[in-house]
Length: 320
Image (cartoon, rainbow, N blue to C red; front, side):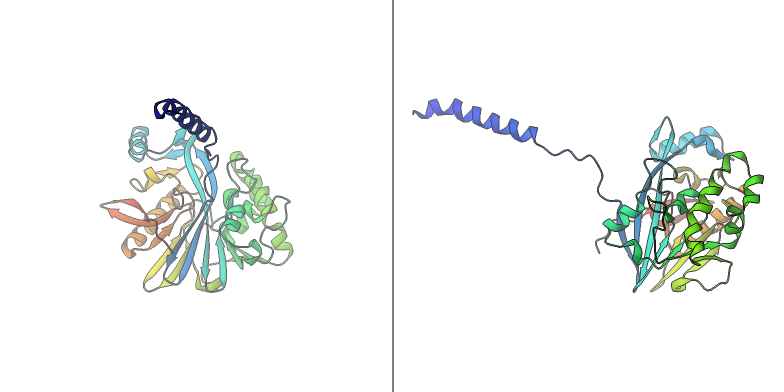
């Protein structure tokens, strides 16, 4: 066949092949597992993504709406009709052979969009049965409901659960529920249910400041968001510190620049502001690593002081 006659045939075959490839191109429907590892001295911390929840900007108090709008726009925070996209993170801290999980996510307590901590823990290569201790920053559902698996059993079969005495005394007490604001009462039975199998097995440990805690981890009083909210400080050696601060910040684009802006769900807003200012100042002065439950995943980075305000500096991706 003459070469000129082959050209239309070759072109047709090329177009047909291109069309076939275009029709079979894979389109991802989900993100990769929500897992990120960071080495901090001799400590390996693994951020575990639980999902996102929408928080309404109107939940911010003590700040003018116009200032909120400006800061949110400056930070390009995703927002839909339900509210601002807000991450929920947990953190696995490994030192040698000891595994401590700080917070557990929401499991099924808040519906779809959350409850990914267990799956991401497994994706990171860990068996939940290997977790030695669960350290709770506080007793809200998005931090302790993940203590239970989908069948309502203890998700961490061999772990001891640590909860501050102040939060245990409040959230596990039916009398507190009866006197609580109506909008918060749903959280009390969730807290009691989440810790029940651990309490029954003698593995629920309420603690107070000064008690000996696992693996040399230190609990810092940071009450305000809840009566017994704590933050966890881990000494990684070589001068490196990690502060896992729970719910010190909910609205990252606003509360670093304006740490005096509070969240309507705080049990004591004045105390919450004081805790936020103190920990931000200490983290900035010490150059500590910070991990935040509601900072954009993986929620690991540093705090920089800017006059009377602060700024969040996300950590850069680092190979292991």
